[in-house]
Length: 128
Image (cartoon, rainbow, N blue to C red; front, side, top):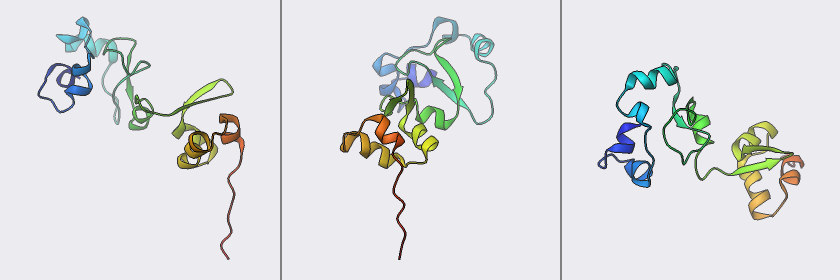
């Protein structure tokens, strides 16, 4: 977090500190404060800015997350709203069993509504 936000020589700086992502005053000079707010890192989890991925590292905008959580929380993640529920395209694919590629094409290439894309079963081809 600190390297990406504060060190211009860090490879990820342009995506964090270079675009204005900062660390709150409470955490910037006190790991103890960070630990009090966030707790120990759970096994297999990493730090994620959420729910505002463009927001700063601060209480209320940071969580411990799995790699999958982080993949679904990127700026370029395709989000679909269906029946009032917003989820990443990959989450809908997992839930429906329709591949991410098919869902993407249905909505962004063929122009289907989210309802049609998510509720139309895929064809099952039988090899002869």
